Image (tube, rainbow, N blue to C red; front, side, top):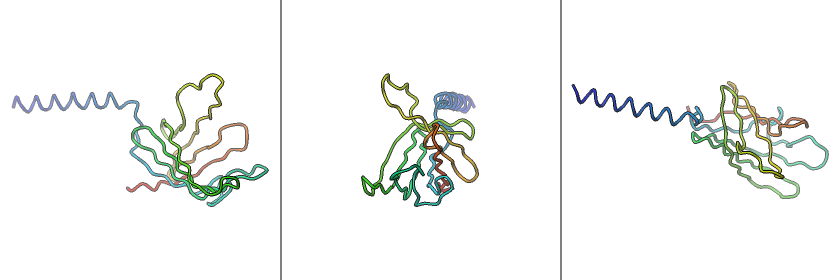
Length: 148
C-alpha cells in the first residue's frame, strides 16, 4: 500500500510540473490547414487587386505545431520570379478562437518589421488577415485538413 501511495504522489508531482511548464505552449495539437480562398475567391487567384502586376496564388498550406511554430508554404506564380514555392516559419499565439502569427520580439530600431497576422478559428477553418494595415485587407481562408 505504501508503494502505491508513493507512485500516486510521484505521478501528481510530475503532472503538476508538466502542466506548469507548458503554460506558454499553444493549447492546440499539431494542425494542418489548406488554403481554399483569398477574399472569397477560389484558387488559383491573384493575391491583391492593386494596380499593376501581382502574384497568383496557386496553393498554400499552414502547419501549426505544438511547439508554437507556424509554417506557411505558398506556391505562387509571379510575373518577375516565375513559379515557385516559398516557406516561412513564424511563432504563433492562441487566445480563445483568436490566433496571432508572426514575431513577438521587439522590432530593432530602424528596421522594417512586418506586422503580425491575426486570425479567427471557426467551424469552417481559419480566416487569417495577411496584410494588417490601412490598405484593402487580404484574408486567407483556410480549411482544416488534419486527420481526426
